[in-house]
Length: 444
Image (cartoon, rainbow, N blue to C red):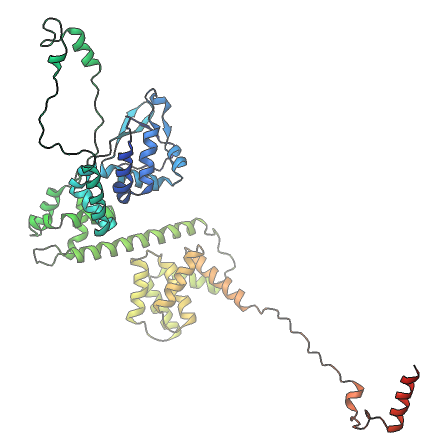
């Protein structure tokens, strides 16, 4: 299995394949559920890329396939590996003056009956589409095959043969002439091969059996669990020796392989190694950005930093507890030891982290310790110096009082009329006033 991260890596297609309508139907209905749409598109693209008159110098880069398929390089190779697994494509690495060139050999899509006769393909299809759809596909293709030809019943062959119809001079019918033989050789070409499942096993099972035999695990146990072992090796990218070494803690003298226990152990070890790898990467990036000089640190900070650099995490914890009072608990020692052994944090960084935890709380708790560690790593803090500077900077920024704008309260004064008492009779008219009012209206 080959893969490259160079999109300019050259490739060419070695042979021509013709896809007929029936082949396309099998490709879409039966193969696409197994390999995916990108792989089917890649197969069809490689078919169209074949150039019978092309030379090696005309080879194109893999990026041209990426452009046509609109996918990443990783996705492209994942699709290619699926095509290789089901036998539609074989990939070769050719050494020449242009360095290594990828050569793709294409294989014809097999007929539906050959597909269903291949147990690996049929079983995988059933897993992908479900039993109901699987039976429906099988029935549809079987019915279509039967309709291609009607059975001939109660009949005998009365066709004329070649000798009855045609005459050849001399012994030409028995011994063909040299010209005929040469013509036959000239036109003899290799037929396009039909795809077959690439079930070649690259695992050295004898090596694994011999390694386990030392620990009194019988060879039969390896044979029974072959599929699970192969799957775990592929998932975590392990060699035969690495798999056996990783599984040794799961052997408890029962002469059997506990695959569930082995699977859980591999997953946990993989998680730890990846976590440690990521932490180390972040630490390296932080150390590259570390300041050469100790800035903005006073005498007390420098004294604390010197103590953190000269003592182990356990010694520094005991020193802090002596200074502040209290006892160093087992849980605290476990937390700081875990930060160093499992995640690979430097000792001086752990010591400043311990100091910071004890500023906020009387003990080092796992929740607070991991929260601070994550915050530091996300901000590129990788050394004790950087940690102390980061803590001081954050403390100063939080200590500053923020200016707040408080609007003055506006009190609206009451009007003069609101202070006067209302006269209940002020809105009433006398009889004489009403008469005068109506009199004025009539005169208008």
